[in-house]
Amino acid sequence: MENQNTNGNENNGNSGEGGNGKGRGRSILVMLVISIILTLLFWKAYDRIANGTQKEIPYSGFIEMLEKGEVNEVEIYSTKIKFTPNDDSNGLNKTTYVTVAIKDDSLANKLKFAHQKYGTQYKGIDESSSAIIGTVLSYAVMIIAFYLFLSLLMRKSGGLMGVGKANAKIYVEKKTGVTFADVAGEEEAKESLTEMVDFLHNPKKYLEIGAKLPKGALLVGPPGTGKTLLAKAVAGEANVPFFSMSGSSFIEMYVGVGASRVRDLFKQASQMAPCIIFIDEIDAIGGSRDSRRGSDSEREQTLNQLLAEMDGFDTSKGIVILAATNRPEVLDKALLRPGRFDRRVIVEKPDLKGRIDTLKVHSKNVKMDESVDFKELALATSGAVGADLANIINEGALAAVRAGRTLVSQQDLIGAVEVVFAGKEKKDRLLSAEEKRIVAYHEVGHALLVALQKHTEPIQRITIVPRTMGALGYVWQVPEEEKYLESKAELMADLVTLLGGRAAEELKFNSITTGAANDIEQATNKARAMITMYGMSDKFGMVQLESIEGQYLDRNLALQCSDETATKIDKEIRDMLKASYLKAKKLLAEHMDALDAIAAFLIEKETITGKEFMEIFAKSE
Ligand code: ADP
Picture 1: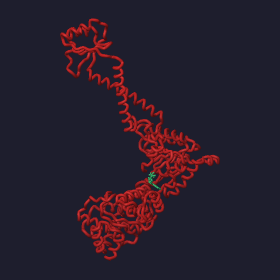
Picture 2 (picture 1 turned 135 degrees about the horizontal axis):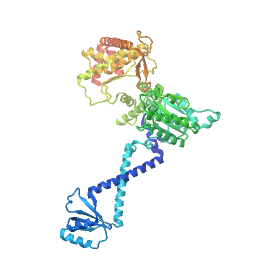
Picture 3 (picture 1 turned 90 degrees about the vertical axis):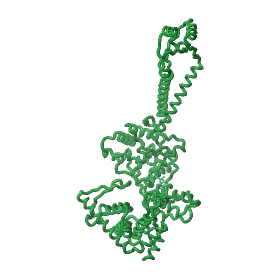
Picture 4 (picture 1 turned 60 degrees about the vertical axis):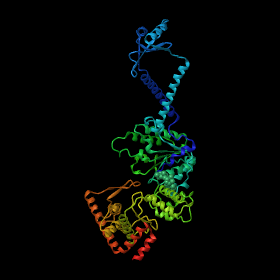
């Protein structure tokens, strides 16, 4: 998910920070009290440092010391007398004596005498209102300074010690301005959500007939496929406010905070009903309660509160809850039962048509020349999600600006596809001549096997300019049409192609390098999947030996067989890869002339197109 939902609240002047006025008033009061306490403490400490310690003594003691010449300096206030003794006036830790003044007419004379005889200094101190005002003012300035300092600290840390519901980020958009027209493809998802829109528009129609609408729908799909966008579009189509919060932002380390945030969210939403509540990454709070080790009471309480709120509110008010996740399998069953998120809307990665539409939606405001061919781009971006495609259009537009052009061309966009998938060209990484040769032969090895085998996709281009994401070179293949099935023959051909890089290196240089690491990883995964999931190995037959976990994320595989079988699978993979490698070497050895010719061209040009490749290939055959 991209953080697009963060900007809505500024535009409409609605309070985006969650938490109501009451909570905020309380936290201001707390800060004020803390500021006052700090000021007093500070003042006391300052006083101690500046004036040293104070000792109270009786008036008689003062007169005695004065007459003995033990007093250094006297300050006379209207009700008290402060003085410092002679022997302890050495600076830092000086003691000040205080005594309560009594009416003594002879004091003036005694002071005069002491001054003349012992050099005692004395002065009267004015305690008029202006002096008091001065003191009060300096207190006030200090309290304000502490208050400002505390509020700065609070804003930075997101709350006084991170507690309190005021810092839960609820984003509110009164009008999202997004409609279904902004969401490309995803027709099935839109269809399921249209009913919700209609319900928000016209709840009476449903209530009259006695129908209850689902309280919530769960949007399930890989990251970047437009789940947030769809939720916003529902709000936009229904013309209702959109409340959004991320599942993870409910959770704090303090138990009970999450639950109070859930309450707060529903309270605010019910005040603005009809509206949409969108909870992104709901798996952060809605994970199954029994699958977790140990107790995690904060998460559990938050989830329980969410369930209670969902049960508690009345759909006739017009609150619809949409939640998004890419790990539906970990969700607690209680969330999925009827009356809660009973509708599941699958938001898949777009197919060819979906990608073309997404590219079109995002290029609406981008000026393009006539060379742009969305179908070609869509074919080259199989597996990309909406967010990638939006990024490609933007990168293409940036490239056009960089080149000083006013229109975006197909070439810009193809370059952008490469930037998004392989990273930027790393022009400053200079390969030595020898390394460049090795990379060139490696890549041409792959490409030649593509051309030599029947079941593979045509080459778009080959490049040996290093990229920021780590590739030193690559062969870019683009299918002629979108495919949903792959045959065993195609997969076998892919294995040979993947190992062709290493084969070319070995054939040409009689040595091997680390450059094949990624190829080996891909080939191993492919061979493993053929055996354990696709039932394409004669030895094992059609038995499921591995299952997929986390379908929408990284697709982790979990073995479903005995250790003994696992060992056999490993051996089978090794045999398959070995056979593929031998085949790659054999095919390349038969076409060494073509390999040399194309590699020489590539070393010189660094990038060659599929067409140039085929021309040289045809000539050297
Ligand atoms: P998710 O919530 O599924 O992770 P988002 O809804 O945040 O994904 O999508 C991120 C961005 O990708 C969107 O803001 C939009 O620009 C783009 N996008 C994704 N899917 C689509 C789509 N189907 N149509 C148009 N744009 C899309």
